[in-house]
Amino acid sequence: MQHANTQLEERVKARTAELELAHERLHQSQKMEAVGQLTGGIAHDFNNMLAVVMGSLELLKRRMGDSDPRAQRYTESAMDGARRAAVLTQRLLAFSRQQPLRPEAIDANKLVAGMSDLLRRALGAEVQLETVLAGGLWRAHADPNQLENVILNLAVNARDAMPEGGRLTIETQNAHLDGHYASTHLGVPSGQYVMIAVTDTGMGMSEEVIAKAFDPFFTTKGVGKGTGLGLSQVYGFVKQTGGHVKIYSEVGHGTTVKVYLPRFAGAGEDGPDAERADEVPLGEMQEVVLVVEDEPAVRQFSVDALTELGYRVLEADGAAAALRQLEAHPEIALLFTDVVMPEVNGAKLAEEVRRRWPAVKILFTTGYTRNAVVHNGVLDAGVELIGKPFTLEALAVKVREVLES
Image 1: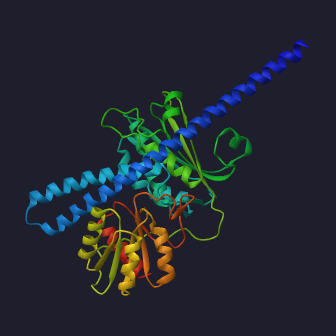
Image 2 (image 1 turned 90 degrees about the vertical axis):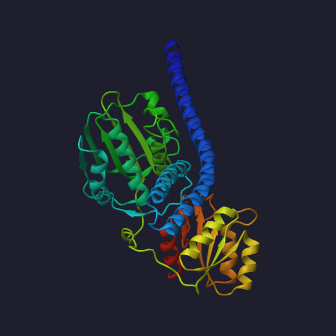
Image 3 (image 1 turned 60 degrees about the vertical axis):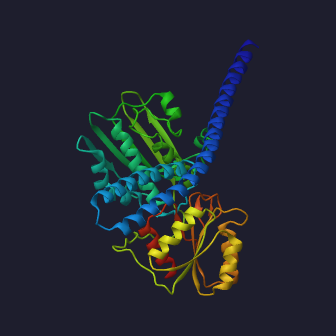
């Protein structure tokens, strides 16, 4: 009886410990979700403001030309500050899992190899870069541009953890996370993954630091040395992609961050590299664009930018006004609409336009998707989108791409 009681007490203790661990993980997951919703809303407002600031500076710079070098320098400094702010809002969106992704089949070995020069420049001469690329690697299913940002973020973090220099190793592997692993890691589906590990020989992290490492704005770096959003961006992207990220570290012995991306299950080739235009493509006055935006300042910038690019531009402050414009102007070739608007959002407006005017091309813009044109973190099929804030060149290229499709 005594032996049986002892065994029962041990089982109860073990089960209690498991329940406490599960509760703690659930609490952390709920906290990250709540903070993510908050940061997504903040990023939306900032992106609208930055769209006006960056766009107005670009138009001002074009108007000034090269006549006043000092004014040009001031404008460029302001643009640089706005770009840095835009990077921060993109990281907020990544953490909140509200960035629209374009996942495709990726050869992770090819992607890592193609980043070698960029990584060496970012790491500096004191950090030795090594790559260990697995043979027979499966293709991953992820957004290649965002994955490059993740690897660069992890590499820069590793560099900062090795102030006296060291070795950074990027490794790829096929991985299978079984049911037991999934049961002990909340929200991780079991299955086949492509693993990318970034390992440094730096100062390492304590258990307390690891527990907070993915929290937004948490950083162990000194004032002015970092925003605390790098690992948050990694976390948000990986979760939105349907993957998993895990940190292994020991103080004084370095850190390994393992990123698990879902294995690509479909057929098809790797996505083509995007071609960059050398010059800003211009429109013609007979090409009419209807701008639909409820924020007056953002709407005015969009109208001015498209006019600067050579298009004839009409405007509307919402869906009802947009439909009236389309009825009055059958020559409209492109609907350029915000996604997030009161009463009727851009996605519903687009549905009505496609039904009544199927020849009209549609381009969405947004600083925050809220699942109107993005579902399960992936941009809906056939949807063309340019995120706020955008540059004049990016807008020019995207408008021509949509009109000529």
